[in-house]
Amino acid sequence: MAGSDAGHAFPALALATAFAAGGDKPIVYTGEKWAAAGESFHLDVRPLPGLAPRPGDDDDDAGAKLSVRAARMALELAPELAAADVDIVLSDAITLAGGWAAELVGVPWIEVSPHPLYDNSLDLPPIGAGMVPGTGIGGKFRDIVLRAGASRSTAKGHRQRVAARRSIELSDVPQPIARFVATLPGLELARSDWPVNAHLVGPLLFEPTTQLFDRPACEGPLIVVAPSTAATGSADLGSVALAALARLQASRPLRVVYSALHPPQGETMPEGLVAATARQDELLPDAALVVCGAGHGMLAKTLMAGVPVVTVPGGGDQWELANRVNRIGCGVLVRPATEEALMEAIVAVLDDPGYVAAAEGVAATAAGVVDPVVVTHRAYADAVNGYYAG
Image 1 (cartoon, one colour):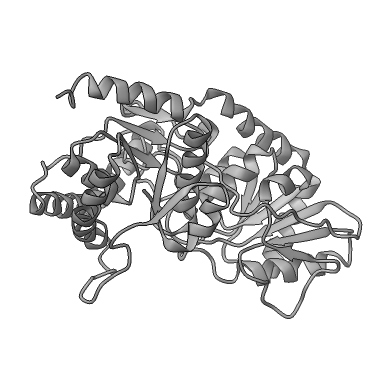
Image 2 (cartoon, rainbow, N blue to C red; image 1 turned 120 degrees about the horizontal axis):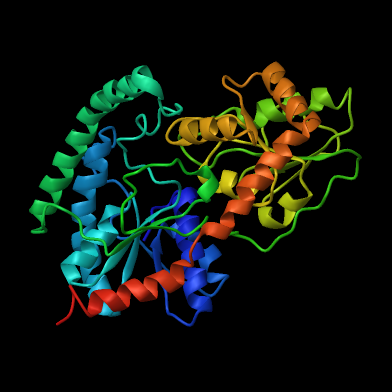
């Protein structure tokens, strides 16, 4: 289960591909716009019931959007799960309806976070602040104060979730049998209160097309521009990045590929620009640098290839991730996005091999993840022989 945003739908499709390869029979419930992409890989893709807002829904209230709508969706989804005779549900962390419907039907479920673990921690400043954990008495006190401020909105969301679950006769606390954190260990922060049932399964990457990118015919290192697909992303990233790269071509050779679902906008374009929707995983090993919005999917895919980044974060978790990358040394954060600032950041990364070394270091941490298919089968076996037995 996952909503229609690419950053959530693609990991769900990636999981389904992995299960199908292992002989299981996955069904993907997500936005209808991804049906064709899923079906081209022989996946059973179905529309997630109730995903579209209805008159009276308050999308400005994130808690209401997540919880109240989730309860309604769970009631619609539960009969479909029962009719399909599913054994286990894997539900995106913000698509609460998947796990709740599983509980209504009486089957085990696993929560899937398609990004680092965003639970608040006693060891960290509030997730989303993008801040380095405080050290010493002053730093730790700062984090305590910040967590206290953030806790008010967290508590409101918890109350809304409890009320929504009670409205469909579920217990107050969700009961996933496991949690998957789909990121690279190198992008995680150390914490002493890591959940005991949470497993690092590595990035869940999916290419929605089989098309391949042409390479620009001109000379120079290959730069990939990949604007964010998220609604909270920086809207002007693509046009400003292309204008900056066009200006840089006056002083150094560069090849530019624009990877996006929609054509580039703007008056200034680099010489030899290639713009398309095609397989990024096949392109990235040839890249010297990626300019992106710091969404987790693109970041993880880029760093898995050992390629450094220049990030122009928007809202949501992009600010958090961009700051982590900046601290690790595998990228440079630029905000606000001006042509001058982007030019300076691009030159800095291209001319310093330390950024490549840091990106390759993050890629190497992939050795520390576990196979989500194996863990799912093990967790399911434990569940049917325990809590869900009979």
